Amino acid sequence: MNTTIFISITLVFVALTLLLGYFGYKHTRDNEHFLINTEKNNPLIIALSYGATFLSASAIVGFGGQAAKYGLSLVWLVFFNLFFGLAVAFIFFGRRTRRLGREEKAFTFSDFLGKRFKSPMIRTFSAVIVMVGMPIYCAAVMLGGVNFIEAVVGLNKDVVLIGFAIIVAIYVTYGGIIAVMYNDALQAAIMFVGMVVILVFTYYTLGGVIEANTALTGLWDTVRNGGGANADALVPLADKGMNGWTAFSSFGSEVWLTVVTTFMLGVGIGAISQPQLAVRFMSAKDDRSLNRSLIIGSIFMLVIVGSAYTVGPLSNVFFFERFGEISIVYESNPDMIIPTYVRELFSGVAFGDVFVSLFVLAVLSASISTMAALLHTMGASGGYDIWSQVEERKGNKNPGMSMRPNRIMTLIMTVVVVLLAYMMPGNIIAKATAVFMGLTAATLLPSYAYSLYSERPNLNGAKASIIAGSISWAFWAFFVNKGISSVIGLSRALFGTDSLMGGLWSFVDPLIISLPISIAALMIGCLVWPSSKGDAVEAETVTES
Amino acid sequence: MLGIEDPWVWGGYVACFVTVAFCCIYGWIKGK
Image: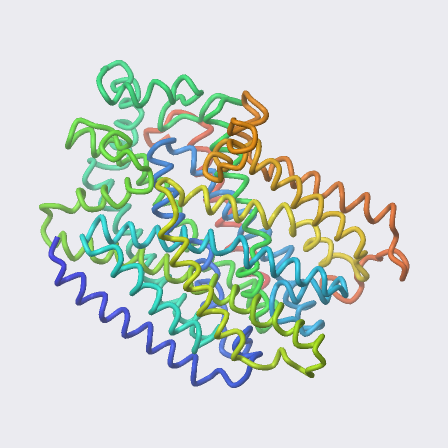
């Protein structure tokens, strides 16, 4: 494609991004403004920032590619994102997080948990989870954007990766949460336009909605019975329970377990306890702002992921009609299907390069918005949650009020993320996302929910939940779930096999096992070791007004 | 529906639109 058009549009985008970074820098007076800022927010900014942070290039490129492989049934992930990630998160978690966060004067998710349980240990552990798990997710998000630009525009991967990191690091480090959230809003608008264009153009190219969907339904049998490389790719999937791109897989089959437990539940439920999303709740002025955010937020999320998971499967029809091959045959790495599809879809089309540039910018926006939020969260975890506690023990007063540790940690974590992005294997984007979301849900979700609905939360229950959740999650991830254990390699090194439990168990996501264990441990911990200050009672101060 | 025969798939689209409608109505009423 014509790189001049893309570079021109991108330079305008980068200039706007840095301008908003400067706006954030000018309005960041102290560390409170760096970490959460309630003055410069409104429902539109919160909704778009939440949506752009939640949905990254991982959703569009990673899960879009998985949808090309597994079909339209991934639309249920859109539902889980909307239901758990937005409606439940805002209504049952958001308002209480905002009110209690303000009451406790908490500035980060870890700080919030630590103050609710009156436990530096919980705060430190939560911050460590962020520092260990989040770089993997952040690198996957970055890789989603970089792979896309490399495949579609043809720019050098190293240049894109480093350029990407420098731009994000500059505006996050100096502009703080204001720069992050205002840039999120700009990037969300670009994502929205890009995804609408790709959805409309896909259906237009394939002859209309009903025609395209009908063609996708019929393609399954055509390809399965047609022999050749296409059938070789499909028959194993059919043997594992897949029934077509417009049909749900057979209940309990390998494909069903992967799609339902890892993609739908892992990401759907895991989104509730994301530290970078909880900060958006704390940044709201009042409850009405959060309620209003639901309107724009829900429409935004439906369009972004609904388009991605619809276009992904339909790419099979396009590739088959144009090249005689289905998506997974034309491009064997699911992470590269959407980039390749966009490049081919607009090739030879009038103003095709402009459309491609716009869509690349949409994916770039999706990547940058999530990356910035994650780097801001990691910087705050290292600089505010961990460093300030170390300084307090040394006897320094109010160490949490300095912005410098956060800025230094943000830069350090940027370097870590870039190095991780170089080390990651292919077909990792969707998995890495599910891994981080599953890990935070298994370890922190029960304690987080409990801390919101109890006036005096029992620390022993939270400790039991966090320990049981993290140990059971790690065991299942490292030694049972093939998708994760095969990448880590620990099980193979120690026992000579990727999964200690054969059969269908090796396709069950760790979250499905560890979240119930974590919830049970919380309940048992509260019953066996009651809080020394009396049992937790239903919150009076935060009940609905 | 719309070329998709499996109710478990088109039902997913219906569930999404119902959720968005709920969010819009809830946000409108509670955000006034």
